[in-house]
Image 1 (cartoon, rainbow, N blue to C red):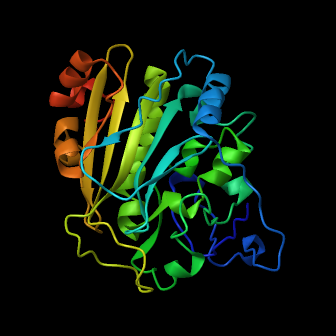
Image 2: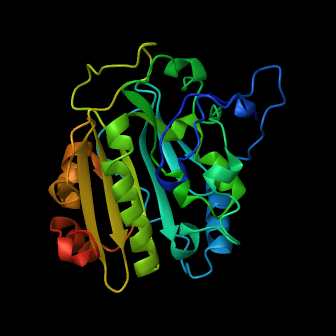
Amino acid sequence: MLFLSSCTGCTDDEDDDEDYATDTTFVESEENSPVTIHHQTEEERIDSILHVNIEHDTALMYELPRFTIIKPTVVDFHLAYTVSFNAETLNANWVAWHLTRQHTHGPDGDPFSRSKLKPPYYRDFDTTTVRQELSDWHGAYPPYEHGHLCPAADNKWDEAAMRQSFFLSNMTPQHCDFNSGDWVDLEKKCRYWANRYGEIYITTGPIFYSSRFKTLPEGKIAIPDAFFKVVMRLNPEPKAIGFIFANSGNSQMLQSAAKSVDEVERITGFDFFYLIDDDTEQSIERVYNLKDWDLLEQ
């Protein structure tokens, strides 16, 4: 499969000391040798989870939601995350992944970090025949840039995982200040929680409050009004929390963005963490407590 890169810049927390917009050594074209990255079936994804995550004792992917309303979707399984892609908005409906303690850092000094691999952006040919193209991002910056849904910094443990995090199907237009500010802050908190609790389950994606959405200048990729993220942990006891942020340059406190998972479900039309038992699901989704999540009150 062929994946051709874009050279526009984006921001994704601590690995962002490079200016990809001006570094043409990482730009590939139709005439150059393409990068080949293997996609996975659902069975292969489960196998990789069991192989890589030694402490993970179940093949259930608790992070995967189900739809309660009809939306266009093509589900694609990658090494570290799963994406549901929407051919109408050219955004993911959601991206979901299981983040473990082992995945919050790479072996031997993070050899597969973004700053070392310097990956380009890749067209994702497995999502749908209607997909994001490299040219669809022309004129996006400013104020919008490539916003990772599954962050690159969650994938420093494996080269293929890092490169797959740069599929355009994992990218959404995010306001530059939000992408480099509040969004990064929450991503860092999630990595801290994965270390603190051993593993967490994350689902995130864009929110469109109207079907009449704005688009990037090329007129194809929809600009989200907001973004959601829900997080669940099972240790030392099951807890869950949600967040909703406006896609703007205004500063938004994590504490103010926090919601119950039930509230995020009401707004998004997704049923999160439905694979756990019903009693646990209802108890952890109905309410949330900032004190249940270390560092969230800071």
